[in-house]
Image (cartoon, rainbow, N blue to C red; front, side, top):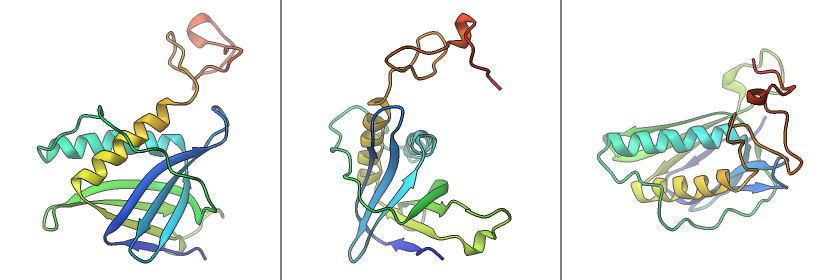
Length: 169
């Protein structure tokens, strides 16, 4: 069974990647007062997190602009586990954002109660810095095709909009 984490408060949080564009492993690096963790995740988790951060900041009447100075990406290390689900909410009473991550199930039918979790309590400034950094990390990969929006390799790609061979489901 993997280790669960409670970061209350979070002293540092950042997103990074390991590998070359098109082959990158995304990860979340979290530090608290007496512990730290690296959680491997997918690009779609990071993209969803950015969208949710902007949504929650706007709902709280806070600055939601992703322009501005972003901290450098996190350095990779040994991951604790792979993220299967990630969510973000706002706790009104504490006036803090709470980021939740749940471990990816590795066996069919695995009970969610047996999966590790990480809960991270963040202030508005921390969450905005995370969103800015995540945006830099996500956009630093392969360029997207202007016709279909899919990532392009240096050699190009079979663009569905140009009657390419890639099947869109």
